Length: 192
Image 1: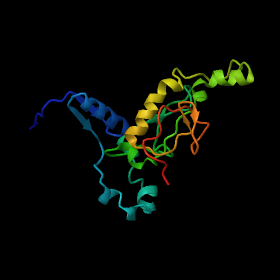
Image 2: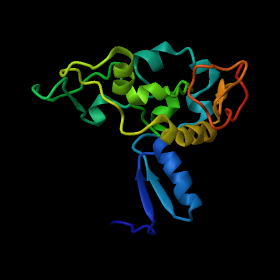
Image 3: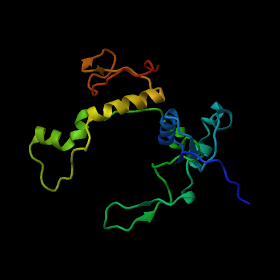
Image 4: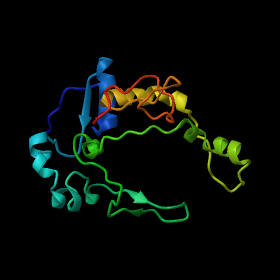
């Protein structure tokens, strides 16, 4: 017999980084949110004990934190002329499995694209002249300056550490002077 549960305002499918950030924003706005996750709940003593860190068999060979290829069918093709075939081995694409998704095996590094990365075609044409017709490089539809507040938000919500090198256009000693301008420093000091 089915059991009817109380209603919610929002249902999130998947509770990795994206789902968690959405949930934080939606619950702060007063909405009742439910997140559905296909995989297991993980906790530190059972899944991340320091003795497991060197368990090459469990994590490297058996992919202990990754989605089983049999749980979902993803297809892939290199171009539109090929037939999209299911991936049976993930290779370097390793989707996480469980609450936290791929964030569970995330290595904790976040990099911002450079301002010039968002205008790749324009940047290259200014530097080298007009590109041939068949070259497919193009500018993004968004700029670094438009995304910078979102980079800053993500770094703060995740507690990223580091030292800004370009704070509002001013070079800061100890940081990367070639990075795009930041509106604020990292939320945590440089990790040692």
